[in-house]
Length: 182
Length: 174
Image 1 (tube, each protein chain N blue to C red):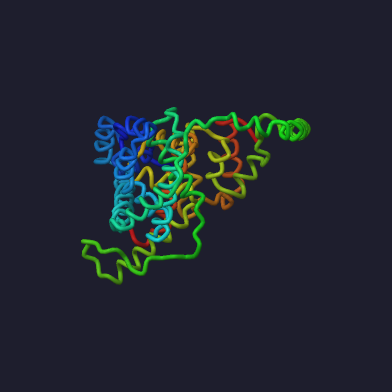
Image 2: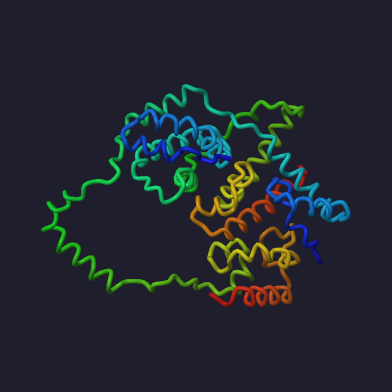
């Protein structure tokens, strides 16, 4: 399944986030692309549906109660004086020394490794984990149209419904683009 | 979208003991922050509780704001973190849809609101928050990344997935 590369502008267009030049180009493209028009129409319906809701803002009495709660709060003094620590210094020294020894003996590696193999994420989880696990960078978004064929709406985020060939292709794609960081 | 003009001056005044300056910060941000809380929690009781928590935290710590980021980024970070760590105490739901000018029968509006609530509720909380900040508040991905302490790429990806999932969950309404 091939996806029109202009699909990646659809959400930004619907949310009015496109730069004017990009917007004009996309509108010119829309006029001649039924696939993008259908995409735009569905997104427009989705956002119209979500945007219908009005927020029931609280009445002024609520905000007055919040003000009262704040007035009852002690204000932080910002940069606190640290001299009071000196009073506890004799007791703190052995505690700090013990804590330092504990940390030195139990310190973790300087970087956090992601120990789950990439294959496991792709085969059993979903793409959400990739950016959240810092396995990919900004270019993921740019590459979404490449991933699109593997990412049917009906499948939602689950990738475990891909056939073997699709799974292998996706794993190779991610490894080529982002390296094997797992 | 808030641009935060003049915030830093107000914060300086607060640090110098001018409580009235905090009132101006409060008046400026209470509605947009409440909107984030409401859109995140989908009900007004939780949103009120969150909004109150946020402003108390801000009031308590505003003098520690060191100006390394924009004030509104600092403020929204507190709001977002408070929302993300919020655990609903029970399944509080509004009894009915809010009044709206849209000419849809009341019963259908209630069902529709329930469907939207459930769809947004089913988004992972980071996706929900990114979607809220982007779609309703109009923040750029780099601003969202600063507010939430994630990469711009993660903000984009979360938004992308949120929209896809919402389309899928609300398919029958489209």
